[in-house]
Image (cartoon, rainbow, N blue to C red; front, side, top):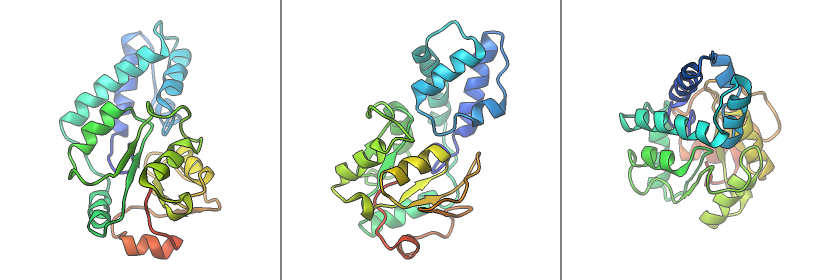
Length: 212
């Protein structure tokens, strides 16, 4: 979600910098980019340890979520082609799942700005026991959709997300945003979702896209 369909990464970077600064520390953009796609609690622990914050990892996550959520509620910037592709998939009757390591409260704030039938399933970081790069999130999405993992296509922007999709046995369409993606088996790379349609996904992977 973050960085794939909505450009929320600047919000996360700003929230992390504000939090660390409030405790007298310095947090760089490079520090933030190292966390793209990570489980929130693991990211919170990393920030806590690296910046020497006198609060728990859970408190770090709460502070970050609060600031990012406030930004999202003011409106989101959609990634190029994302809304158009989701609309075309819905019109074609292709079930889609939103799989994100953000928590449900943030996912809901984004989903509320899309048509109500956009996602048939929503998997968030607080609904799984193991987050990306573990395959559990995408396997859970396929199970909720009632489809085989092999019949899904994952759309991802982070190395951890790509690893999760491939580990789940799903082909992955990589759309790099703030961090680069290295070519690997099972991964097709595009610069943007602009111009990508359901037929294009089928042609690229030989399967109907069901997971994202």
